[in-house]
Image 1 (cartoon, rainbow, N blue to C red):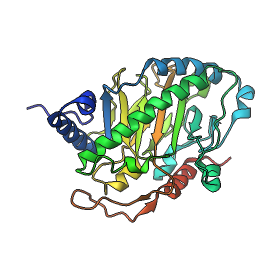
Image 2 (tube, rainbow, N blue to C red):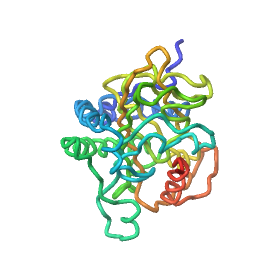
Image 3 (cartoon, rainbow, N blue to C red):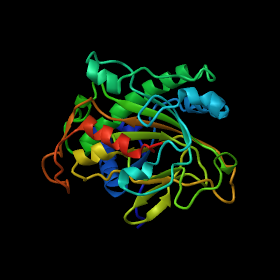
Length: 323
């Protein structure tokens, strides 16, 4: 009998509109996949995928500008603006020494203030939009509203997969933080030859609850690590989001579910001018949520409770390349 794929494709329509048995089967599939790799592909999600195409077109206008035209928007990791060449090395977060990642990013984040001055000053600042891409703001804001809805639906599914009440996680997402990166991976004609051990994004796990990735297929693309298969190319479906859980969710489940370790390969030697662009939505939770492993069987690690955003800030600081 054929083994189920380590990273399955899950149609969300039975979960969103099906009967109790269909919802239960979906939850079992999700639980199995997240124990193995921390990754899923999801279809039937209801997000307008043409928005991603239009966002890429608008963002490309900015990324192809000369450095001097982009530099006024430059920020450090965790800021809102342009992360230029050499700004980030994701491998640092897991202690893997790598050269800086071969990418540029436009980075946005939660911007609706809570009314708490200290919290808003750290986590809910206004976004900065490139004047060279005037259509980008409207497209991104429409897209993000749909991703917020999908993220909460996924958190409800994850809660049921754990045997918890459906609102176990979403009771902590009334006013959550999130991040959104438009990652541009140009070819060697822009970034030069990769150094030894250098990637478009170095090996790492994400930091939050769930990550939604709208990606393009490519030889220098996403790889996922599993204990059974090691590093392998992630499956691709143009109509699907690639979904992985982050460190906060792994801690919340006592490592019942693995935080999905992944990397993005450097420009391939046989297609050195390959250019890819990924849209990455990092969902988190309300600031200062206490994240403690769920009670009962299933978890493997009895983590100490952490303040969600003290943890997130430390991880963001870890991947910043100090000038």
